[in-house]
Length: 334
Image (tube, rainbow, N blue to C red; front, side, top):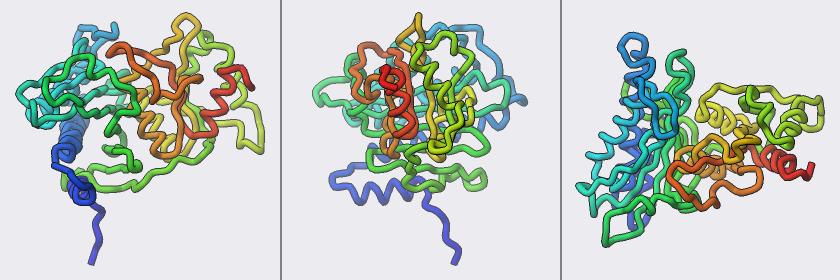
């Protein structure tokens, strides 16, 4: 008899059965993230045939031009989770303030933070795109959440992961017990377990960085990138450069094959570009669960105490030994 991989629903049911006290709301949340992925993937398959490319003419809270697909993806997340019953607040990179969902309270115990469309500069050129999500539990049982309740260090995440829209659509996530990847089967509409307990190599042969910004980088980062280009047989160098403009796609490559991704702070902008709550924290949780590391260069990403919803951080993420070596250069120890 032919064997089929586990579907996402089957995997969740099995995991729930093995977890004492599981009530099902958290399982529903993961299923709903999968639904958002299907909705966005459906639109992306028709991009160029329907009017979803280009910009809306507006700018978001980050001061960036809003792509039509940014807006569509954000609306999909909000609409799905408004009706899910399992989330009492959502916050997005695209929205200045979080949306509280009193209609889901008190049964909805979770807080969802997300980047609805990562790599949106790729939307008009048929290149990889993604979405990133982070889940916390609302710790208060006597009141609705407030904005301050979403400002939590990454160590408190219950789950995190990403959707990747490329040659196939994938959902990759962790609930703190390893990293699992599911690939969407376009024929059945089911996510099938394709990558079980993903583990990163301790060192890779690839680096990903936007070297167009090299003149703005601190000297330690410049020296580290230069070192990756010098032949060194013992360390497998020179490394190959692979940068897609989509954080999810670049981190996914490293998750499977090893290496390091850098989006450092700049001399005039030491806080960096990437958002702590919507990008760095969730990807750091995933990568650490796979045996890798995530750092600002001086601090573990997951230990940062956020001060604002849209706080930015420098990010060095990837294979453990690669990140540790990058940290040594940043800290002037190499």
